[in-house]
Length: 316
Ligand code: NAP
Picture 1 (tube, rainbow, N blue to C red):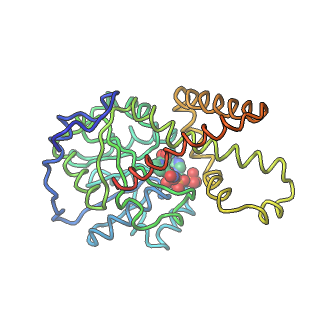
Picture 2 (picture 1 turned 180 degrees about the horizontal axis):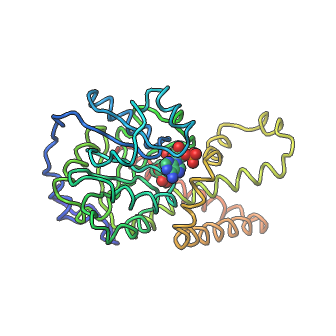
């Protein structure tokens, strides 16, 4: 990778991109112990792929929800239940809990792990997570990640194989992770099909507010608007086309996961909402003024999103 990847925020630096592109894809020779803390959609899907790629790996799960723990064993998502006391022996620890929970769980995990363990957290915000471990004595055992993949479902039954194939994993503050452990983590990510991108935590939180957090709010509020008007749910069911279904899909997402994300990323989420509300208001005003030429032009200019989305698909 010789050219600068982008952006005006200086998100991905050339130095890091070059250095990273040289790392070797290593096979993990010895039998690995992988711990997943929070066995839901993301943690569960990740260990399914790791087990698929490294069948000799032992997958241990920790979850404060006993039902989820048992379900994960029954579904073959994990091999057995683990405990914090055993984390010393872990090769990898995946922290995959809601982002507010991560703020307390992650430092405890770092307290418990051995020198050769690499811990990664997969939450949808990065600045608060990076800040909470900034001065931890084992900061070099931690790599901050955000896999850009998911669905609207939760819990171990939502875990699916191949979720991360061709998807981007955003890594923040890679230089704060011990080099050997970076290599270990990056090998694992690429071995399950992920592309790696580097970003600083503030840029991550700012950009993700637009492309992910705003979409969820917009879907929740679209769902609310329709539900208030259409009290009879059967009517919604009969009249809803695929457009409505796809736009409102994210409104099925878990409030327990999304409330702390909005709280942690409040500043940037508010910024996106202000822009979005201004656009909605402008559209309403154009319609109220019978300004159909302007409405046509507005939609025509937003049609350019097709090329942008095609570009994203091609790059996968
Ligand atoms: P999920 O399916 O709800 O799984 C989270 C699991 O963690 C649940 O079993 C939950 O149990 C458990 N848990 C909660 N508190 C815990 C604690 N103190 N100790 C141990 N386990 C605990 O959530 P997810 O969708 O996998 O999301 C996990 C993380 O990935 C979040 O930080 C999210 O921001 C991030 N992420 C999500 C997506 C997505 O599309 N969903 C995409 C990328 C990243 P309970 O259900 O009983 O609370």
